[in-house]
Amino acid sequence: MNNMKNNRWVQITVLLTIVASAWGAWATENPTHAEAPEKFIIQGQDAASVAKLVRGAGGRVTRELAIIDAVAAELTASQRVTLDGLRQVRRIWTDAKVEVNGNGNGNGNGNGNGNGNGNGNGNGNGNDDPEGIPGTLTGRRVAADLLHDEGITGHGVTLAVIDTGFYLHRRLNRNTRNRSRLLAQYDAISGQQSLWRDDDDNGHGSHVTAIAVSAQRSRGRYDGIAPNADLVSVKALDENGRGTYADVIHAIEWVIDAKDVYGIRVLNLSLSAEPRSHYWEDPLNQAVMAAWQAGIVVVAAAGNFGPDPMTIGVPGNNPYVITVGAMTDNFTAEDPGDDRLASFSSVGPTYEAFLKPEVVAPGGHLRALMDDSAKIAFDHPEFRDGGTYFTMSGTSQATAVVSGVVALMLEDNPTLTPDDVKCRLIASARPAFAEPEVLAYSIFQQGAGLVNAQDAVASDAVDCANGQLDVAKDLAGIEHYMGPAREAEDGSFYVEGHSGFDWDGSYTSDSGYLWSGGYLWSGGYLWPVGYLWSGGYLWSGGYLWSGGYLWSGGYIWSDGYLWSGALTEPMSTNVWVAPE
Image (cartoon, rainbow, N blue to C red; front, side, top):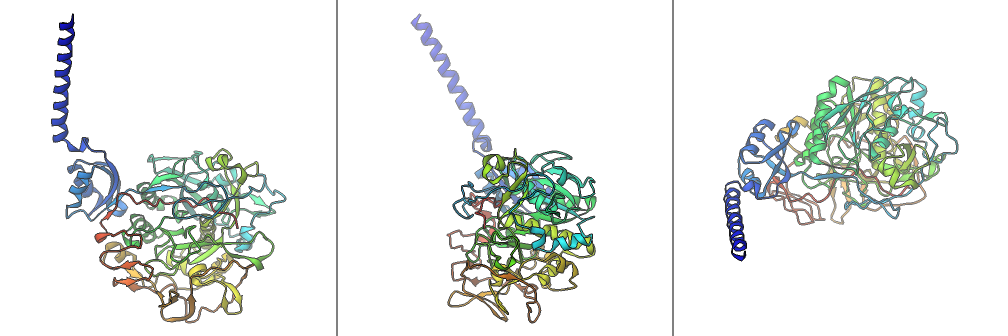
């Protein structure tokens, strides 16, 4: 009996040895199966040729991103090294995470590590004309209600929102005439197109959509800035508010491809991430520039990383797009005299010296529709009113306000180009004053000022935005640009060639100021200014723009080809910041 057992153990041992030897030989011949693959974005001459290179190296292509001549792929370390050595490969990026940040415990502001917090109480009961609502009168504050009275409500203009999805609520599905205005829904994660699908498990996308276009009425006024605009909803973030760069880039590519089918004129991006390269090397920024070039007005959040200087995020740091900061009514909706800049609102200049944000809009505490079963609403009932209203704060919300204003402008004048829209928003904005002719906040903080829908529609300003920038040459790598911001020896910021705009980088939280018209932007406007990028510009804080791209955090981007093992700062939808 013992001999039989011993023989069996010998047979099993021999068999395991043979199997192990076979696996070792197979793994040696097939090294990609012996290493754990990671997700990357690989850029080259075009998506098709890059896909061929990836497959030739043994990698798996998960999605073609023709908009930036790239593919998303899964690669092992050895496959990545192989591709990085090919001259046909221009850049390799880690496919960064895109996610909602914050824990909502209400004890602070958003920051770059995803710990933005917030608190607030939902207001309203979800019915038309709810009473007793202490929330911001957003439409009135930006004079959109005056345009509504004139019959300008966004009719005939399609807004695309890339976010966490859509809430099937009758005041979002339908316009003020009770006609369907949801033209399409696309899930960039699964690649599926649908319609009439309640696919916002998170809630953030529904909230910003409602701010822009809700046909709900409160106190006799529409909640949405453009309540008759048509809508395309693109889901790029999941239930937890997470996705990838590839998902968002694919979403932008889908919007561009669908532009003529659905008449898309405006794209809302309530997203922000810490910059990790020059604007022209960031793959998301490349996609955003392609959308702008295609004739789509892109409106992006500045970020919730203020009040310190140089905190504008991606894609708000893109010089072409309209970047939006946040102001607050200071919880006195009926009194505009104490409004102020929100302390969390990110400010400029950008690392390439551009003046950002262009404008600010209400974002201190905005009340809007959200499904009470969405994850945010379920996890944080303190933000709910017990019905379908939810209060949130951030530049995400301010961005939605401006997207709605842009829709009003395009209804009134459909011939406007993206550069025209940006110019007129800037020219008509109302800055905050500490005293006559003395700005309360620098242009690096408030941009041109508080957006004003009525004045933007009436404006006839031309050639005051992006005039010296060429998006085609930028995308082609022929030219890149820098802005007019400079830093003095004492660390203060100023605008080259213009006096009176010096800023020491401080933030004041005084009682507030009146955001009014009448400011003379002497000598024209500062935003068309752009210079050819010459490299080597030094910010004293440690941002060295030269061949090595040395960041103060120690990241060296040799030629910018590889975003290191992990672009650790995720993109954020800037959900949680304390109401102001």
